[in-house]
Image (cartoon, helix red, strand yellow):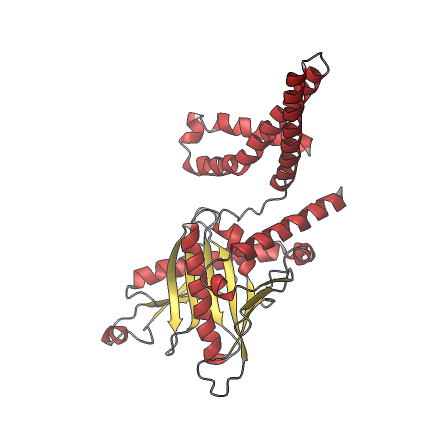
Length: 358
């Protein structure tokens, strides 16, 4: 590990020199790339430097204890040595985590799609419940949420809702939400008081920047049509809805939320870019599926990952066997306990794998 840390520190020093080079500063694309790389290893380097300082302080203190000291000085030195050794152990554990393989998408914004699945009206209402939960969680994190498209049902649920969440390290925390979310509750329309089970699916995709993923115009078919649903006379008069199809992959995105065709196209492009980027990544990582399965589930969009049981006020994450009796708090956006447990589980699995490879 220490050889790797030395090379990371060397790269960090090299990056700082490059970032003050006028040639690099004038090249926006390269500057962005190097700035991102420097930020990604900054904490690792600071932690490693502190580790070296503490190790030197331990050596100096042990040397001092080998000399003749009065009782008071010796006691102070022993106390300091204990504190330093404790700090060294803590830093070692932190460095192990910092040196784990990084997900290159962790610092990205996300596009999230929530759909009502099995269970009709109740599933669509639950899709709305999940949307509210993620929106409140995003607010608490200081992130910004923007609804890109929403297919609202007459009873206030969503057949489908697409949103963009922007902020620091959004993907690193919400990537674990991919999958099927199951709800068990008595629907408002149920006269016999029977508990129904319904499902909503969540897809989380990292946002792809235009500079990273160029989709040539020749690869995209654009269809313009009249929007459907609520919206009054305007809907029938103006062909503002847009469907974009990426011809090489067959991925299509339709957007009709805005009255402006241009705005609908902009939003559709954001989602299309994210879906194509996600598609490319999924294909490239298919060989690692077994590894991903051993971590936090497969990330399979059809995998049932969590159950929300209303009668028992219970939430269970099936991937890590975690059950929390705080349904109301979780639905109000307090997801930290679940997300922290999922991150820890992922880190533990990666550590075990690294040890196995060594």
